[in-house]
Image 1 (cartoon, rainbow, N blue to C red):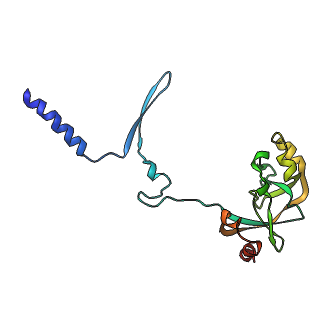
Image 2: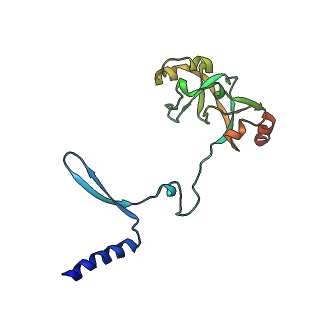
Amino acid sequence: MKKFFYLIPAAAMLTACSPKSNMTTVTTTTTTTTTTTTVPSVKPEQLGQDVAGSAPNYRVLKASAFQMSGDYADKVAVTLGADGRLVYFPAPSDLTAGSQPTEIGGGWWLNRQGISDGSVFTRWTFDEYRALKTVPTQQEILDAIIPGARVTAFRNIPVPASEAARMTPAELYEYIK
């Protein structure tokens, strides 16, 4: 019997030295059931990595530029899908004084609002839109679209958006030519 008690510490030491599993048991309890599931373990430092041990993938928002069918730089843009439904529109609180596009030359404007090639322009100026107390309904936004006011050309610029904000229009235009 005494020999059995010596085996317990030895077994504990062996299991402590064995390779760690990459699986974790998760128990979920609701008011009616308890479910136990084994799932892969992920260490926080592995999140965002394609391959264990590789550097994390970081996504950097790149700058973009666009041309318009008219002079709508002071108007708030929204984006329509191919079916004509709204796929993007900002809340009034989303826009700042820095959201208005910057002219960079040749009819091109630095995108500072989230405009894409499916964007159209509304009758609201940036100041008017920011002053709204609530987000307009989708129907109000659709009704505010200026007929024919749209993005006519769109280009990505191979520079982070934060860096583009500090560049001169002439420097940015070099990427567009």
